[in-house]
Length: 275
Image (cartoon, rainbow, N blue to C red; front, top):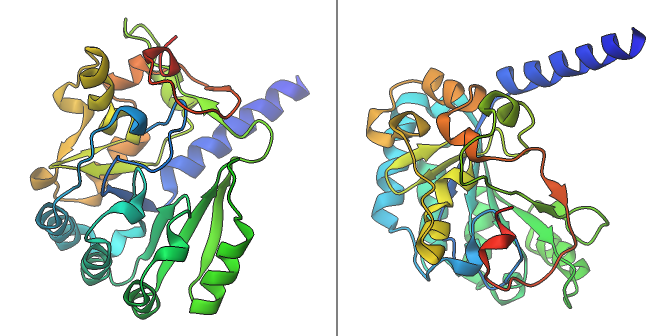
């Protein structure tokens, strides 16, 4: 009985956490990447070398901020590898313009940081852009990156350390769409990762980026109208909270929780993302 009560309280705390946590938005600049990670949740190994146009990014941020500028705690500029984005500085300027009170993060695997220009670092400092580094078990000295950011006066943190044991996951999809969407949503590791790409807002990057899986392997992971919100139709923060807090039809594709797996280079086969 004690174990049941403890588990029940744990579930209530998780639900409260997800229901009332501040909103964060992830803006995909590109799904193209300079790494080739097995099972990437943005499907980067099979994604084309394409980039969000700076005008599209500006339009999306302008519209969203006009309704809920003060309701978003964190803005993530993400990839793929974000630093490959050719208009990275302009994207930072636009993000700070439309979200002046939000924390703004650039997510990166860090490999390109030592090669970034002085102009990049000046704008990071001026605009109070933070660097979120994910460490991977590759032949690269990650320790120098924290020192580099410190020297430039930039706040940096390790967002994920994939060098640690059991820190890499396989997020599998079920092409039959037979998973219980409520259970998948409850156990979802990506809940809260509201993702903006093209002209739509999705509850997570897996849903937002699954087109790459479809295009690469001829799969048919499909979206229904209630799986996303058109940016132009966003009028209030309650719409974002509903998208985050309640399961959508696409959740029935997701097998949760994910299983831990060893880090490895992608072979670009569909089995890396499907059972």
